[in-house]
Length: 267
Image (cartoon, rainbow, N blue to C red; front, side, top):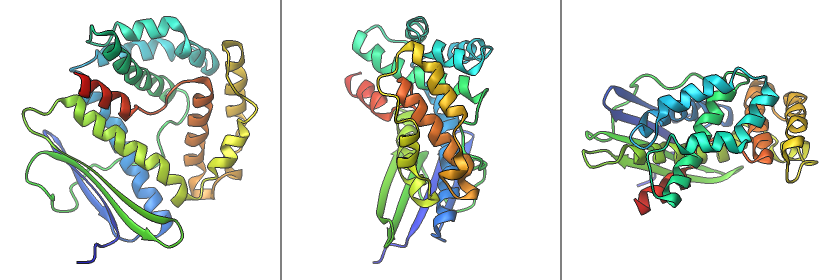
C-alpha cells in the first residue's frame, strides 16, 4: 500500500487533546504547519518535567534574570552562579544524572528569560483543536512526517509514545524535545531560510569568552533577517539567528532530547 505524503501530530493526555494533519505538501504550508507543531511541543515540555526539577523555581529565576537588559541577561545565563542555582533546582543526587537534568533546566531557563526580550517562538499559533480522528485510543503523543520530495529529498520521521501509568513524565518531555529537534532541522528546508548564511553572519566568533558575549548580542541585534529568508519567513529566520548566537556563546535555546534520554536510561 502506498503511504500518502503527510504530516500528522496528535496528543491525547489528560486535558491536552490536539490532533491535526497536513496533506497539502507545498513547501510554505509544510513550513507553517511544522512551525505550529514546534510551538506546541515547546510550550508543553516544562509541564512534563515537574517530577524531576523545580520548574516553578526555574520560572522564578527567569523572572529575576529578565529584569536585566538583553546583553546582561545573556551574560548572567552563562555565569557559573546561574549554573549552581540550576543545579539546586533539579531533584537528583547522582552527579552525572544531575548534570543531564541541569542541561535541560538551563535550556528551559534560557528560553523563558529570552522570551521576555526577543521572539523565541515562530509566529504561528500552536495547535489547540482536535481536527482529525485520534490514531490511538490510548493516551499518547504522535508525530509522523512522510514526504518523498524530489526537491528536498525524503523526509521520514516517526516520534511516538503511548502513555500509561508507568510512563515517566520526563519521557514525554524527551519525546516532545525530539520532535522539536526534528522540526528545527527541517523547517529551513521548507521555508527557504539560509542557515549557512546565518552561520556566516556569526562566523567571526569562535570560542566566545565572557567579555565577548555583548559583541555576539550586538551582532544578533543587527541581523537583517530579510536577507536570509523569503518575506513570510523573516520572523522564523530571526529565531534561527538567535539559536546560532546562543550556540556561539554556549547556551541552548532548545531542550536537548539526548540529555533526557541519557538521564532516563541511567535512572
